[in-house]
Image (tube, rainbow, N blue to C red; front, side, top):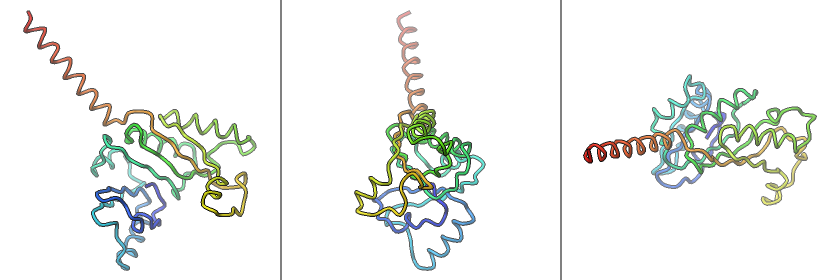
Length: 203
């Protein structure tokens, strides 16, 4: 979960047993919020583990690995609240998640509308721009209309989608993670070595 450090969902949601939750958020805010949660006895679901990774880490990828993240297992990534003000910051985040997320993993959340591009572009152009950006990192993305979500949840919107300050999306990872690639490399190297040994025995 890539959050703003004040989100309570990691603690108040009922997670499947043995789930490992990674909270990526500003360290200073997370520490203050955590102390408040401890004061009222709030904690993650029984049998689950919550690990905080400071978003300010000089190497987010290494921070995940150091904290036991396994790129050979399916994962769900959620983004909401973290201030992403530039395309460069979004690109950096997509690069990290693309390296970590196993093929078939899901990445969903909310992006600031300013990252869609020129505000004078129509919805189709903005959607295509976002799809191209995500596909650069191996994600097939779908932009979700607020109206559809509101209708399913039986809510009414205060503002139309065109004036919303954020964009909802759901994306699927189509590439192999770095961990999966390493497994394949090791597998092929073993096959090559076995082939060389068999050839030597025949000689």
